[in-house]
Image 1 (cartoon, one colour):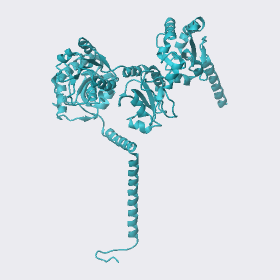
Image 2: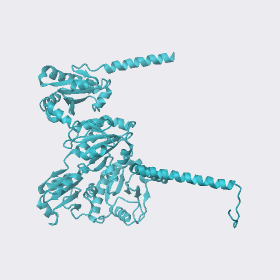
Image 3: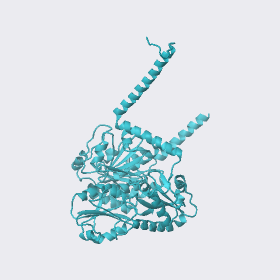
Image 4: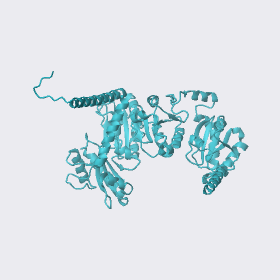
Length: 581
């Protein structure tokens, strides 16, 4: 009886759900399904609203949408703008495929190809102006206005076998606005052709599933700008291990043979902001008159002084792409700037690093006589002297390639402005001392103790109450110092912090571990496993030989033990001096 009642309830619920889902807004436009979507939009310009009947914004937008439909379908049919809808409650897979991340979302298509997503206010006049402009200029969003030329553009994408990848012409990135699936065989060749933003994922990973539609939308936004790709780590484990993937999803940006990890938010807007920076020109020309202004506007700025257009311009352009516009790089051929910053006449070029909005003197200069590589220098000088250690810059600071010492002031909310100002002053005084030249770089930061209190306590044993607490961390080695050379806790003043840093340089202060003994042991064990796995992947045949050799040695040892045991059981007793017949 209870089972019958439950079945009846489920049937009623299912019927209610279907009826509700099918109750689309009574719009004048046609509603498309997975069966007719591609066929319908294959010809002409189509503006598609993706909606859900449960969405309050969709219901509020319905009258405006109907007015827009009437305006183009009935009053101005000669313009060739077609409008339709997709009910995402009934066709969720289609909406995911179309990169829908919220409701209502309107995508513009031309001859079956995605052009752009409408992101302005959902006002009637704004929508009409948007579509009128696309009626005349939509073709410019793609390669041309003719179907023949569009087919030629599509022909640049050569379809290959399953589990392979399309090969994009180096002249244009992401021509179709799609996510490209890479494999072990196609990965290296693809990322070497043009800058590429890659997602490493596992199909079972919940965070990966959540990111999937957003990643599709990013690919469409970056059409003709930047390659967006993905790798299934369940299928290509060796590739993911080789690329340093330690969790899912992980996002890496590849450019000119180098890579950098994206560690920001996985929401649409931050991802697009990152991708836009990656796809933007890396160098901007300026005059001597502009220098003070650009330095004043940027906490850190690089300026390439070049007396002639030679290989250094292309080299800096190539290496600075991984900076992703932070800090910006400017270029000038002004002789006035060569003189102003005492660049020797023997140097045909130099790169100047300016920090803290101060254009009087560069904090560092890279020239042909420098010992570092250009990429190392660019990363070593990219951080301002002091900054807030927030979630957005945490990886950039703590895992910086040049492994700086990081001064961290954990700060209560009510004194953050005072601490920030004081730390900035301490940092500038440290930079003027020049005692750090040739030694481990130092970055001065402060953290919101209310937000990061638990992390500070677990990592450095810091409990913040009314006054800020200061530690110096070497995050790469997972060690830290919380006392200066006098043995007292580090205070937020010049004397104490400088004493601590110089004591670290001279090895006069003992460091502490950020991990306990168990955590360190597990990390060493995990590192050993990772190294072993990496060796096996890199040298599979040698690994097999070593394993076979080890097994052979074990078998021989066991055989020898059994032989010795047989001799003992035979009953023979030998006395020293006896002859063996």
